[in-house]
Image (cartoon, rainbow, N blue to C red; front, top):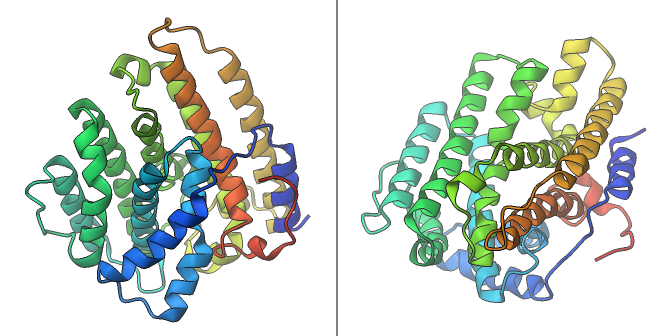
Length: 327
């Protein structure tokens, strides 16, 4: 099977429903008007690429209950992470020491938004994050802000480690790659944002409950591995082995086509585990069960939203395929 055929097959097998808020495309228009105002050097071609990237639809698919105002916040955050990803993983990618400086400047801003330290985070990227962080910082308690900042730190640390590996020509084993991918995917950054949308932040002991963390980790693997199949064509040349298919191919010594099929089987096994784990979640009491359900739904929507957005976004060749049924 080709990558496109596998992506479509896994999409059909995914038991999680698709959702999309009606205002997602309006928010995408808002984003395209905003970015030039922040000083991003965007010509017409760059604006078209951003438009076809459909970042507001991605955010909307992950947070279908978000108000239009909150979806603007989420879309700005998502766009910031995609711009950082392009800067760290593109043809003129940042060196590891530059990624480290960006990480430190980002955390300084998240921990103390009034200080807006410039080190490692300057220009349009800083202005976009300042704009996106303003409302979560105002509305959410300190323990939530720390949780979000910790997730961002882990993501940027993983991005730095991948850059170090590429600079050294070091290709990770499957086990090493799977663990690193859980950081570089930014799924852990998306999970706390469920609480921002719902306005119901979970207490730390519940958020970090072992079963909930296991579900979150499995959801992370599902969206990451699906993305690895979608980005395989690009990653052959640029990822330095940082792709589940490429890692399986190297570790097992099999042709790429077989590694692709094995990656799909890993995904199917993880989906079966995800469904089983979610069914085993106990009640945490009437005061917390709705917030727990919101979190579990958010993890599920992150999986399904990534699948659907893959077919909508110009970042992946499969997006040129004829549309299928569903939102």
